Length: 91
Image 1 (cartoon, rainbow, N blue to C red):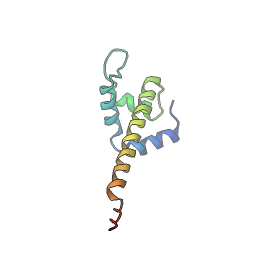
Image 2: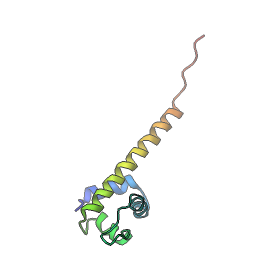
Image 3: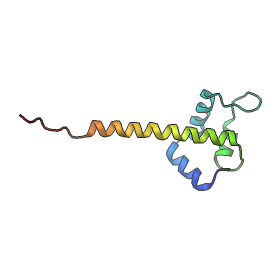
Image 4: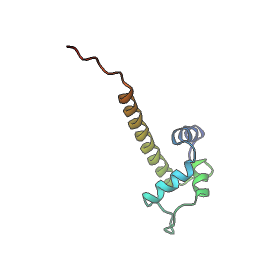
C-alpha cells in the first residue's frame, strides 16, 4: 500500500490528470486485470490514493513515475542547453 508522502510526491511529479495518464500508460504496457481488461480509473485511483493494495498497479505506477522523471530531466537539460549563454569567439 502506498504511503501518504509517496502519494503526495507522485502527484507532484506526474501532475494534473494523473489517472488518465496512468490509464494510457497501463494500456500501452498491456498491464491488465485478471480478466484481461484494462484497469478502471476508479480502481487505479483507489490504489494510487492508498485505499487498496495491488502490487501490480503499484509497480506500474512507480515505473510510470520513473519514465516521467526521465522525460522531465531530459526536457530540463535541453532547455538549459538552449538557454545557456554562448561563448564569444576569440579572434
